[in-house]
Length: 114
Ligand SMILES: [Zn+2]
Image (cartoon, rainbow, N blue to C red):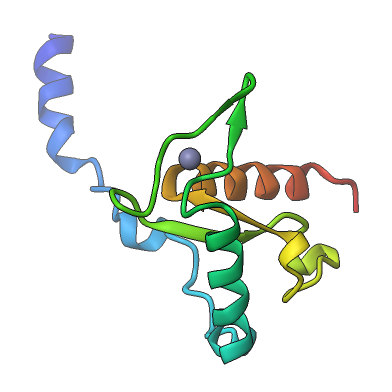
């Protein structure tokens, strides 16, 4: 009986350990710990009015610092040559849009021919 066979097999399937699937923790990036970076971050967030600057279909995200954690994001990532401490290269993003942007950047990077 197939049913019984499948049921018997189930406990033998290995449990996926998500800890091994996570990317390695980034080593502390000195640039991100400096006072200059802190000042840059605050300038980016205050220029944005402490509100996420993500625009989709012409509508700006409503999330603000009063309810959400906000990130100062580098528009052009530093590893792509973006200026680290130029406010013009910064944008304020909520956690989900920051995650979405990071995800897209990573996908783009992986798709790029070497
Ligand atoms: Zn947002």
